[in-house]
Length: 432
Image (cartoon, rainbow, N blue to C red; front, side):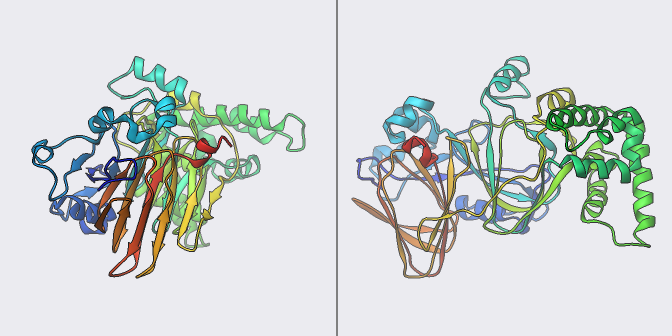
């Protein structure tokens, strides 16, 4: 697979993470892609959580040599994408090399979420360096991790803090939370005048205080409060319809009994993405993915600070001190139509953008040469990829690395072809 700059397009063998929150067996898009990409057999009771495409050391990709490659290339078995890029840095393009060095600045994934992920946030660069230095076994790199999730199926998440008005309603309605945080902290929130000039600052301070108190509650008090809440909601469900958030809280309690994350869900926006909608998350913003399949892209990092809905290590103090405590519903991206077939999702981060391409049978599309690298995932269907001096078949499950400055023509052959592409944010090149 050769590009116009003489470098080759490379097929990749992806990596899968079997975290326990993943969907089981054939239910998971991740399992389907793994089987197609590597020939691995799907185990029906095993969770398949994340399909990784990139160079991160926790899930490195390996080059798959084409049939008919030169013999000496064939002998180099299992060359990692990271090592290959380090030996051939020009595949990144000079602007990318200059800014990020000889590594891919983004990590591309597919997620199959069967049960809620932990309530978490990702550190900014400064905090990431500090955490990596202090606890390298927990925080494995020194990079920030802004990210974006693009829904494949309906995708549900908790994301960012609710507004001050909504928070007041929670403290009025959910007495079990007030019992944990104390009436003084609750009163501090209730007494904020929403028309005051310094409302936003006061709201942040009060929210920080009440959220920190909640997350720091003792195990014994938390278990008691959740048990009380559960009994109350089950009783009330016989008299009225429960709200969506109340129903969600009961679901979370089944997944993580006695976990403080069950109660903290009341503090977050409950977001439901339709297929083709995306959500981006800046550093230091709390979130928890709940269910569904999505394509995800992020800066190359695996740093996660967790505080609830998890059996893993919790770093409640770090999480509560790092959050921005911004309030309000997150921005939902519907994407920008580049052509009848391509929709682009541009988050406010330099490291990445994502294209969703749906090509009807017999149609072609051109991805123009750009100054940075791309990774393509063939999600469904079959087609042809063609560069200046190469042509080849691409089928679902294929992952392909495209060097900088390579024009690529893709044609759907036997059926509709669905592709996703991750690349450097085009605003980075245009200086916007």
